[in-house]
Structure formats: structure tokens, C-alpha cells
Amino acid sequence: MAAKIITINQQKGGAGKTTLVAHLAVGWAIAGKRVSVVDIDPQASLSSWNEMRVEKLGEEAASVDGRLSVGAVTGWRIGNEIERRAREADIVLVDSPPHAETEAKLAVRAADVVVVPLQPSPMDVWASRTTVKLAGSEGTDALLVLNRVPPRARLTEDLAEAIADLSAPLAETTIGNRVALAASMLEGKGIAEFQPRSAAARELAALARELSA
Image (cartoon, rainbow, N blue to C red; front, side, top):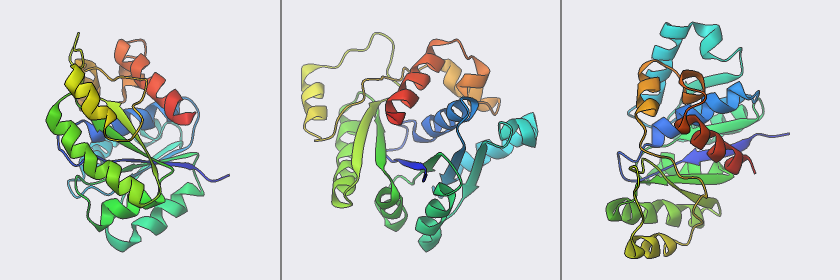
């Protein structure tokens, strides 16, 4: 059975796209899934994190006993690389660049679902329109995920209406702006390894379940 392909895309920087990919990937691998991560962002932040992860944990632990792999690819080979990895994994996660150029289009086209992380701010909502529109043009479902949400933050009525106008469903799970998520990345770990019983770990696990469904 081919893998479920999930592309994470957001036109605006700072929405936590790469952090979300890393934590989801580690969480699924720990849960027993074969996870293949494709880094197509020219900034290669995810690849740099994985290199640090291997240095700190060793290859076997970093790969969660062979169930987690991370690779980078750019250009016209993206579609073929995603398809190849989908034949060898249960889940393929694609960390795409923050623009709608060829690489992002290929990643969206190959996906079963495009996850669009956005902070509860007007600028993030406006930036998300491009990704949702791109997903629609490629015939791919999009799912909005509120990410880096400050404690006790509440959506204003205007912001809630703006999100609803994006014509894409909003995930039930909200990811808080939690220090543990960044701290675990600095250790080369996912939150499921770093603080498995924390609120952050519970939120990421809930999002993983929602995406799996």
C-alpha cells in the first residue's frame, strides 16, 4: 500500500512549518510508522536539524530504529523522489519552500493533503490564501492548522471569519506556542522523545491522529 503523502506549505515565514514537520515525523516513527521526510526548502533547515540529530543521538537512534529517514531534493526530480519514497514508507512528509514556484507546485500536486500552518494573525491568514488556492488548482485537499498559538489567546470574530473565508477546513487540534517544541529541536529531538507527557506532546499526537484519519 502506498504511503500517505502530506505536504506542509505556508507562504509566510515564521509559521512553524519546519518545526511541525520534525515533530510529526518523530512522533509517527515512535508510534511504529515508517516515515520518510523530503526537504525541498532551499533553506534546508530540516536537513540541518537532522544532521544535528544524527550527531547527538547516533544513526540508529536518530532513525528510530530505521523507521525515520530525511532527505533533500530540489528541481524537477521532486515528484519522482516523493513517489519513490511513497513506495517504501507509510507516511511521506514534505517540507516545502515558502513560495508558489515549481518546487512547491510539485509537492502540492503529489500530496494527498496540504497542511497549512498559520498563526492567529491577519498576515498569516492573508498569506495562507495562496497555498489554499494552489492546492485547489492541483486538486489537492488543504487543511489549516492553527500553530504557535499564545496561551489564553482567543480568535476575534473578524479573524475567525477571515479563516472561514479561506475555503479550507480548520483542524480541530490547535498547537500552542510552547517553549518545549523549540527546546527539543535544539537537542535534535522531537517532542515525543524530549517531553513525551507534556502538553506539547499531547497536542502533536492529537494532530497526528487527525491527519491519519
